Image 1: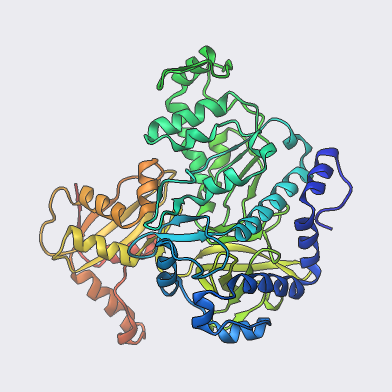
Image 2 (image 1 turned 60 degrees about the vertical axis):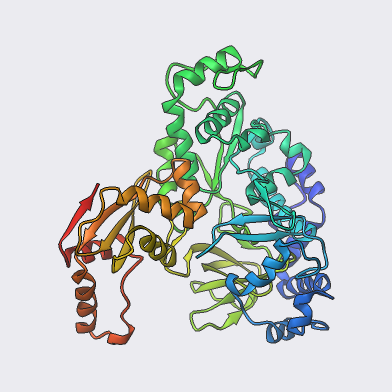
Length: 520
């Protein structure tokens, strides 16, 4: 049993407070079909009478097979017209339940994605969070003491045309936690909303360093590395502020005090780091022991997105599908969908979700690999996005965004290719195909334009998690040679596309095919 009734006192108390979600999770391990039928029934009750249900002929649909036959798989672009109506304030578009706010993340092209939050959906996400915390506490009683430090973004940053609050899902989740969880947070929520990036990071560090932090949670491990660099950069000023009970950058006084050593080091008895571990995050996870000065256990935070919470790390193994939350489907390379109990170990699938917030057979575009089963419910790891995109720290720069930025920066250029230059602070390497000299400010202009096209990239640049791009001018003939090499190797000529998003080795191969020079 994942969550046995016996254990130390804090664990037993939290398990009792977990109640129904714990029982639902345990039941889903042995009866996944029943768990998913129950979630679908809840979702369909919320859909009755909506504009979407009428348009799709969803009224009266009951079973899993019937639902799959009635509603096609659709990506964000197909959902966008419905979501735009929600954003404008229209009622009963996707759910009868009121939309509480919108959470925002980067879209694959064009504007950002703004996704609805309903009370039922928020409970499903919160229940998954509680299962994750329960597993942490079960494994280490010491985590019940001290502080739990999280790095989040503001829950509200603006409002839609229909008056709905718009913000980050991490901030929303932080505020949705029970009071006794928020009470253990060493950083006041207001600190996460400080507009100036440098002042915000300093303020967060100042508060966190004054507490006995036992666990540190940040979705991306690159954030932990960033704050480690800031600790060294601001060490002397932080020491003085902690000793004097001040925050000199704002003039605040009377804050918690603490005396730190002469050597920049975390003054915490940290027992856990919690962050993403799959896909590109692995590069940064491998650098955490060196940054922290010792090897600290790292636990995955789950397979999550602004769309929902899909797999929960309940132990140090791979995350377990949360079948008591949303409806999950797994689409194989032949585009055939499978239910959770039909997947096979070792196989890779694209995740499709149906949620209580009005996403119906929504194609996330995330690839996961099945690594085993807990009972009859799969364990899985995130591999990467299914489409062609570059994402070192969650910026998710797509081919469409690179091409749009190219047209805005160098309208006459014929081609573009890009890769990630991997380092603790990574950057994009951009090759622009043009026979003409590029303007001296091409790097700065491209960087600025790409930030306008991709809000996640803009955030990573502003917070220091991604460096400015490196731009190279490349002879356009390189792209033709690239094609010729592949056609000569037997690839159908009509199916060989111009390379845009590339790995490091392939990018180096492209550069070798044509004369290139750096642009300042």
